[in-house]
Length: 397
View 1 (spheres, rainbow, N blue to C red):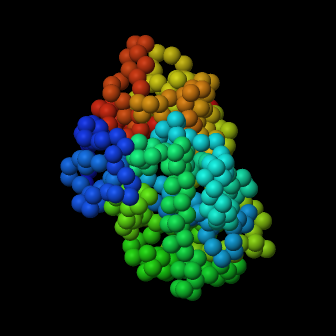
View 2: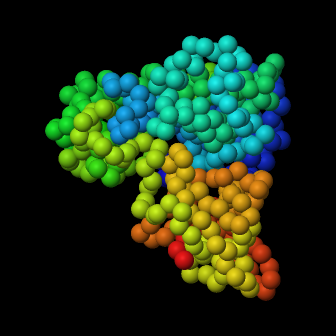
View 3: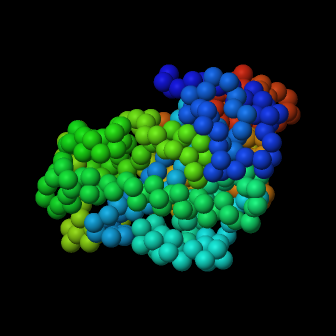
């Protein structure tokens, strides 16, 4: 994005690694002169006080009406996400920090009130709230640099997990989307419809900056994203509202705000189950670099001398898609390359059925250091960091 300063990720990470003092920075004692995230022109010495590379923080909310989820007069919490300054994002960043039960972690810390609030407002449309909470921390929380265990002076195992949930809930409670819309006369209705401009103005007038909102295939409002820059750490820093990066794709008019428990809704059309395209769950096909020779084999490498591997494309539990090959789940390995295997954490991919393009982490394409030849296997990665750049297509069998 032209509005943000573009930094070379590798160079900045290397510089920050040299100056970071492990465990020295307390989350509540950051220097006053720490720059606002995404605004610096040089590396910042204390990464425990400066969120990087995810310098854009999103607080996301659902309006699940079919099936009806959560209070009838409130959106529900989706998550707290770190995006990079250019709009891309990382996911499932540190497998060593992943948890299997958010409920057990919060209970062990005596966080009864927090847990009760989450049970009311942080809801999974399939009824397994703990599964959603685990997913959100493992996918997004493990990518936050200022709550790494090394940033705590007296770290207690899973303290960063509790802090992640606390901050997500705190932000959510300060963003009463339902009331803000209600104040503008935008209320759930089986008959009334609203314009995109009216919804945008109602939210922006309260938040102070442009807000992103989504509609489902029924032209019904179903999700809202609030964007922030961060001054300081995730736990104790100041969240500074910013304009949303994407632009709403809702229609200009005729937008529905469907009441929860409405008698007119009979099928599930909202929330985490809604895919971003019309691909049939369970589709099998090949992954091929568009305009290039060869295809991806079962370990995720690009190859030109053998048979293409069969990949299965299926809808993920919390949006987007998952890919699997005969080797196992597909995601990114420790070097940031596409890989499939029993040790790989399943990533969430985006898929455009009209073009057949598969993307990852908000990137628009993929790249590789060279074109494969002979029997060479070449790693590919999301983004344009390598010299050979291309779109990755899923071609159904």
